[in-house]
Image (cartoon, rainbow, N blue to C red; front, side):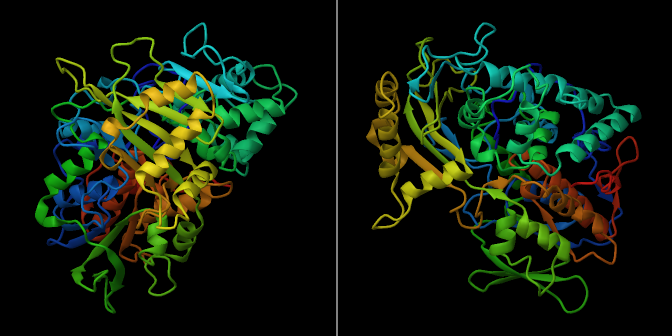
Length: 597
């Protein structure tokens, strides 16, 4: 789930080669997996212990797959009728390649673990770099509307027009900060190159840079840091930002998505995305013979390899009941049915679901430590809405067609996506329109459209027509463009419009984690909880999912924590983990490398 689509600047693929992520600079998960090859993550496991995994998203299924390969008896319980979680690809029809990616949508090549599994399973033989760039605003021809309406002419990001008219100060200022840093702190590429050097000095340098950033901005909101940086005596780009500049950046960013709803988020949670290059060269998953279900193809493949006898869908788990003696657990389904006993349990859901649906943070029984329970309850999870429709493909035979829209109005952004399969002899006459993808305050605004109706939540037609009507109020040429091109195919709202409010979705209760200032300490407690294995603090219950990762909102974060949980459980069951070429495993990552403020 990309959240800051406008921050990309590099164009290489992958931008800086393979590298670990900044919060775990001493370990690269994908290089560990590559080194192991076909060998499992561990061996010498006594017996065939049983493990329950609650949550059939990418994280839970990754953990289950690796533990099963290493000799555990693993059972996955998923509350939906199909696995995937927030790898939520919606196929409009089995006769059409069109997909609405209601969760993860953009895939940078620096999602190294994702790239590893996509290649390993033959889903993307050429990896993420083989895929086309995501057709973001500015990448595709775009209407940009700010203040009084459309800014003429339609905008395409080129050397001569790198930003829309009026956005010179914020674009050049942000670009200068990204490249060169601020007040003695280096720019993001300097930190990334240190990580990518693959040397002790590189890791030490990157660690020092990150520590200095944490000291300076660890308690600052995104807005607070921007204000300090761009109203200073020597702002990057050479020009101080005015109120209007901050408003432009909040409403439209650099012309392809505003950051206003994210202004209260921790600056460090935003900046780490740049250092990890997750906002660089993001890719679009094009259908092919090996990829027919969007990003859901990955969890479907995990589930297929685990085996249908070990993956239970439609299983709503309400409680985890520990035994009075030893580490043994039963799971209680919503209807009272029991599963188990299990030697260990992995909970791979959103943190909201951990707290509300499963009672994982309750005082009794104590399933996680008080510090981890506190972190689960307090770390901020964003709201997010997506609305998509299957439409006519109006652009394939018209190179001058406007593909995207960015506005500072209630409907912030419109994308059009072409799912013509790779190698198809003719173009697909249909495509997909995302008429809305918003977060937090903007999501709450749009949620008001679907709430309080006399017969309950709004139906697809009411919601979609409301958004179309709102676009019409912008005026020409946007009104005619939207009316002509964005109508649901065949007027069939029931089958060709889909929307998701993650905060209203049962057993999710939110989209993904974005920390507020001071909450990195909570993430540290959650992320490294797996290292309790084999100690007196080992409760037998482990947590996973992108909400407990440093990079929530990304499939990479889900896979990272899935591997962590698998490593912790395997060691807890007295197995021996197989190390990488440097003798390292996730258990040897230095959990106290940084002081998070």
